[in-house]
Structures are given as structure tokens and as C-alpha cells.
Amino acid sequence: MDPAIATTLVLARHGETDWNAERRLQGHQDPPLNALGTQQAEELAAALQDETFHAVYSSDLRRALQTADAVVARQPPGMKVISTLQLRERRLGVLEGLTIAEAARLRAGAFAQLRAHDEDTRVEGGESVREMRGRVVAEVERIAAAHPGQTILVVAHGGVLHAVYRQCCGHAYDGGIANASLHRIRVQGRAWAMLEWNVTKTHAQPSSNFGGGASEG
Image 1 (cartoon, one colour):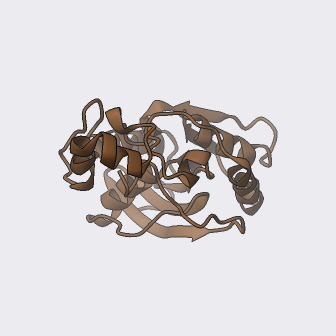
Image 2 (cartoon, rainbow, N blue to C red):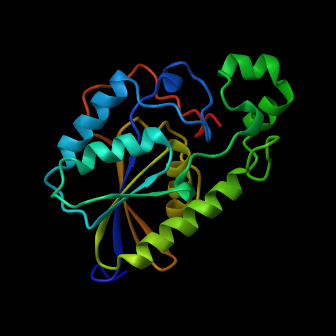
């Protein structure tokens, strides 16, 4: 991989929402950052303020956009967030909006499908892990192709980051991904390389990093 051509992507997970704290499945639903999540976004922005980014991309969901906006506010004037629905969390259909306990009780069949962690299982109204990874990989490679030799910030979701890890390493990531955590990869064409993973730069850490669509679903 040629560093002069390859794109370095700094990926961040959004800050916490009330739904994360409640262990509520978010998927494509759009809750905002809570007070802790806003603090995490500001601390992430401070940690990144001395880095040079050539562009900033974000999921179009509010929790990611609010996190990206906090970072951009500390970047040089004129930087804008480019939003894309292709970086959204995994769509969870009939389970979205339910807590884990509610999903197990009210949608037992769908919840069992989710817990099976089969890459091709699609919960009613949702998308499979493989489908999500396909759109995430395509979008990351599109972004990389548009910015050869540059450093790009991407703000997204736990499920998106699990998909990125799987593409880089060839196997699933079996740990949790912290809110406002940082991850670095390098992409050149179809070649992906991991540089750094799940680094926390913030002090405002919750007791749980429930993904609401990542390893939990």
C-alpha cells in the first residue's frame, strides 16, 4: 500500500444518547445526544483539534451529525460535514425503539433472529449484517477513492465500525466499541489496513457502551 496514494480514515463513534443508556435498539431511529454524549463529543473535538482533515463525513443520523459538528467547530473555518445515509447504523426493523428487555418479551421471534448473529438473517423490516457491511464497505471505498493521499474523518455508529473491522481483519470484532472512540484505517482500492482500534480520548465514560445496533444487534 502506497501512503502517497492510500487514504487514511479516522473513524469515530458518536457520543452517547439516552437510548444507549436505556439499552434501547436505535437502528435508523434518530435520538439526539444526551448531556453525557454532548460532553463526549466536545472532548473528542478537543482531542482532534490539532489534526488536519481534508474532509469530514458523517452518517446523516442526528447523533452522528452532532458529534461531527462538534469536531468541525474546532477545525479551520470553511470545513463542512458531508452527510450520507450509507453510513447509518444497521436497520433493525420491528425491533427499533424497543429496549433489549422489551424486544425479548414483545418480539421474541425477531429478537431470537437478532441474537443468532447469522450474517444473512434479516429481521422483519430490517437488513442483514452482510447487507449492512456491503453498503458500508462500498461507501468507505468511495470516500477513499475521492481523497487519495488525504486524511478523512468519518463519524458513524457501532455497527458501522464492526463492519469496518470485519473488512480489515477478516473476522468479527468480539469487544464493545466505546462512544466517541477513535479508530484509524488506511484504504487503497480494495486493500484495507488497520492502524489503530477503539482508542478512547474522552473522560466522560458511561457505565455501559450499549450499541443499539452494533454487537447487540
